[in-house]
Amino acid sequence: MNRHLLRGLLAMYPRTFRDRYGAELARLTDELISAGEITPLLAVLNLAGGAALEWGRVLTGSRRAALAVSAAAVMAAAGSLVVAAVGLFYVAGHAQPPSKAVSVRIVGAPAAIALPAVSCAVKVTPAGQGSVQFIVGIPASKPGQVAVSKPGHVAAAVAPVAVLLPGTLSIQSGSLPSQVPVSVRVGSAGQCVIKLSPPPRPVVPKG
Amino acid sequence: MTKDAMRGSSDRSILILTSLADEPKHGYALIKDIEGFAGVKLGPGTLYSALAKLEQGGLVEALPAEDRRHPYRITAAGLAFLRERLTESARIAEVGLRRIAVASS
Image 1: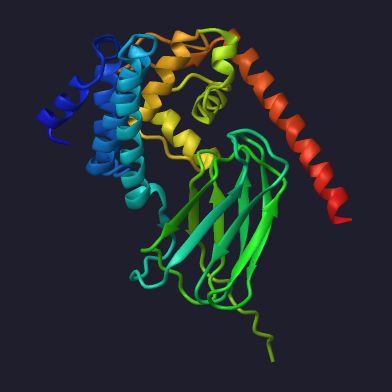
Image 2: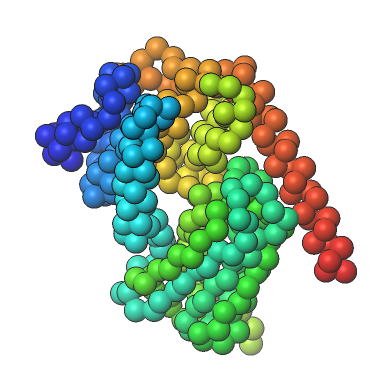
């Protein structure tokens, strides 16, 4: 990332935060970009969102807190939307030209913690089968199953876990080859990570 | 930061504490570890906002810098907090599982 841009982004943070964490944050951002773990655009959005949240934290309690926190929340929300649109989802596995649309809908938990069940509906075109793994905030995770019976149909899977934020997210650029197993992981922050794995090899009887 | 204030802390904080539960880690290692066990990819700003909050709350502490970056270590208070939160989550999950089993039978 451009040094001036990075310096400018760090300058958006409150001074106390910048003095304590600025150098580490700059180095980590550089490392992540260099390693291809994050794009410069996402890094910019993430740092801007972080700065807004830090200011919100610093100003909480003052008379200007409401305005500042609101502004921070708007910035964070806007950043999150863009981040969600650009890169919250990623499709791993075999690179395919974007052709099919996949939408993942998380239904359930009105709060961040604990309802007995959360369902994740997966709409896949064309038909396929796969598994859904719901991650419970932390280490516990429970596998569920999803089967997509017809192209375009929605199959719901329910897992007995929670700690999820509700929301509806969709991927428009994902590619799903025909008949490929689909694994959907619902992360603690409400995002679904979709991973494609190669279709199982058909068993051909000898002779 | 009081215990009550931390109680509403985000899942990010829990992910970070979980990552630090076995050994100290610096920022990059934290991000990779959390991505590995939770499938959540934290951004640098998000990570350091959460780390700052945890450090302010006495749940993690920075170790002396290695190669110009600080590893972070979970404190005794952080371990106790994490244990409490995970136990609570496990209890809720158990209740949920039991109810679903009853409902499905």
